[in-house]
Amino acid sequence: MIIFEFLAGILRMKAVAVALSMARPGGEVEPDPCEDQQARVRLVAFRRELHGCFTRRADALPELTDAILCAGGPVRSPAELPVEPEFRRGHGSVHDALAGGRAGTARLRRLQVAAMPAPAAGEPLMSGIDVTPLARPDALFADEMEMVQVRGAGGDKYLPGWPLSVLTGLHWGSSSWVDAIEARRLRPGKDHADVTVAQVTDLLADLAATGKRRPGDPPPLMLLDAGYPATGISHALVGQDVQVLVRLRSDRVFYAGPAERAPGQRGAPRRHGQRFALDDPGTHHPPGIELAGDSPRYGKVRVRAWKGLHQALARTGRRAGYPEDEQLPAVKGTVICVTAEHLPGGRKPLRDLRLWHHGPAEADAGLADLLWKAYLRRFDQEHFHRFIKMYLGLDAAHLSSAQATGRRAALVMAAYTQLRLAAPLADDLRRPWHKKPEPGQVLSPYRVRLGFRRLRARLGTPASTAKSTRPGPGRPRGSCTARILD
Image (cartoon, rainbow, N blue to C red; front, side):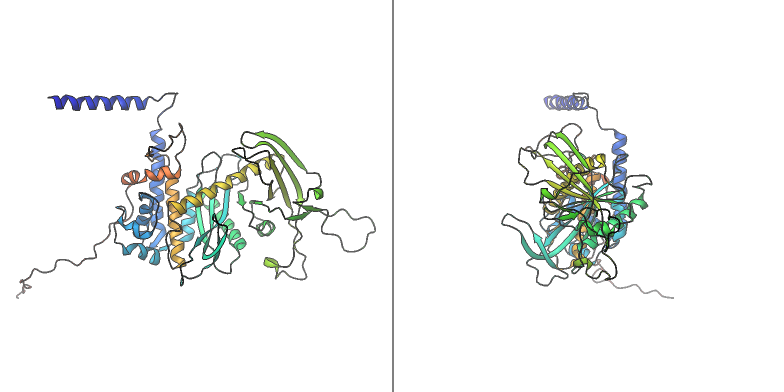
């Protein structure tokens, strides 16, 4: 009798706890069940379409993705993934799926684009492209490797490996979530600027095919780091409805347009006007746009923009084979200089932020103020690279095949997209030392991954059950085949 009363008391305490959790203080409301159902439908549909993108090893590759998402900690090696219950195949199936699997690259990229949330009305869709290295210094016979730059505490090192050109979608807000779209491997001898132009062109086609961008929307904004040739990429994308925003190195030199020729002046017309060196303020003419304001994170901010600047190009590098009877192009754009009083945390900035903008229309005051704020969102991609390498094991698979490494990168990108779609559905299984999220705050990718295994158990899997490779029991010992008599 005492035991029954004790159990009844526990049930009453649980009922009170549930009632208190339903009535949250501060006017908070419970998540809308309809929104959760829609999020679940989107996640299930993505997993089903992802299964259809694989044409060989179509059951092993999705389960390998689930094992990456449901692993108890950081993925250290593919050899550890078969012990996860979500991977229902043998140990040899992991490397067999990576080596012999096939995935439709274009279809997979379009699926990732279709899963992107649409931007707010009147705002451009922001995307970033950056190269991340996969170093393999211990691989002696891996194919299609080249020297990659690896940054570390002891300084930069150049090691053999595979560089990946990663394309992501970026968003406003305090969250570090991005949209994983594509990780394209740079082949030896290929110019990374040409690969960037191809990725932008494919992205524009996918945006139109999936309905993410409609006629009348602002041109998409591509954010690139200082290692990209701003003028070369802008010239290659002339005629396409896209904006390019590139961070500039301090040693870049531009020129204004030439002054009008005096009447009767002889000789060839000048192509370059006043010199504009970024590191020499004495060469700067008055800006066409100048803004000033206060920011809670950066203090007093000053924005200056010079329109109609171009670089003096030479027939070297990518333009070595340019026709001799044609003049090199003068690609005009806007140079933006942003001066901040301090960085977050009170740190002093080492230098000003200098940006190059080129698009179908010149930047005005409103667009110039938007551009420097938009470029700050590019640093979310740095967090993305760190997460997929540390926790999803992008560089943990020491494979000897470049094609297998590309498939591994595609699985990691698809796994990250599932985490983003599962953010409103996953339970917050934070550790005791983790900070409790604020009301309405979206869980981080790390927090979502902690609860993905519980969510995956409710979602199921589109992959078929693995077939047994062991032979059957056969005919019992001592028996014989019955003879059929006429």
